[in-house]
Image (cartoon, rainbow, N blue to C red; front, side, top):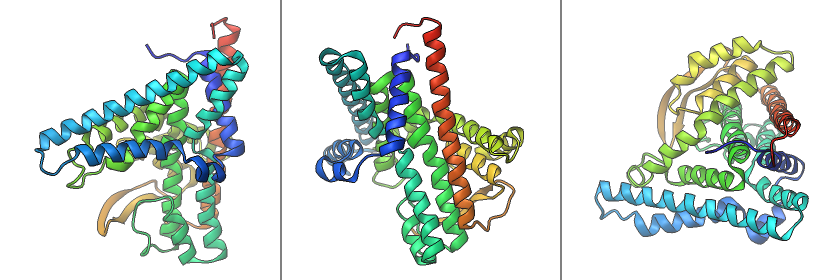
Amino acid sequence: MLRATPMFIALALVAASVEAMAGYPDALVRRIGHPVTWIGRLISWGEGAWNSPDLSYGRRRGAGVALLLLLIAVSVAAGLAISGVAAQLLPPTLALLFCGVLASSLLAQRSLHSHVAAVATALERDGLEAGRRAVSMVVGRDTQALGDAAVGRAAIESLAENFSDGVVAPLLWMAVAGLPGAIAYKAINTADSMIGHKSERYRAFGWASARCDDLVNLPASRLSALWLALAAALRGGKPIAQVLATVRRDAGRHRSPNAGWPEAAMAAALGIRLAGPRVYGGVAVEDPWMGDGRSAVTPRDIRAALALYRTACGLQVALLLALLLTLLALGVAV
């Protein structure tokens, strides 16, 4: 049975603190890569070996299930091995710090902030074309036809959605299932990003990854909306009840069962509208709007969204610390 323990919560605290301060250094990426790229290689191998167009729909779907199970098994085994070896070779505190530093690579607090801030800076300093190039680094939609406001909305939407699946979700799974749970979550999320599409090639093979990603992100998406609502209130913005009322009304309108929750919360907290019509792969998508505010988003709104994001991240760390101290005070064993 999954349950938060002082050790797992402490691991999440260390990981969040290390990642916020240092991120994942570019020099390390160049030298050894990143856990996401390692997971991606396994997914690419499985997709190339098992997703044959000559197979029936059912067999391709079964192959996708097999790949997902392999990813989870390898991830859990890796997490258990790393944790076990660290516990055997290092004193408890050093083992925790070692695993926490490794676990920090599974979070995206700092990198997400940097990429979204770069969009605001590009629009402010160099204009629309620079803004389009910057936002293309964080969104999957076509950016060449976006105007200034659409670039700003895309950046804020990416910030909201990735706050949920790049920050809240891995920390949540780390707190309840330790390093194995966090690695497994990252593998599922990466598989969804790579093969969880409704294209002809991936509709069958990526079905399991997409559905599993929806499931493991469900609690984090709701929690991320709450963090954003609380952050807005702490910063003297919209009342919590008002933000959550918009979330309840608009979250279900989103094509994703999870992305609408943080996006609706962000829109309500900032007094803007997000989502709406956009273009993916040259195809116009008439999505409904999230929120009741203005759609003419400016770089100032991106900066406000980043401030809200920082506060929400801080709230998470504060809760983890409070939980850890409470469990220790109650005498719960590490």
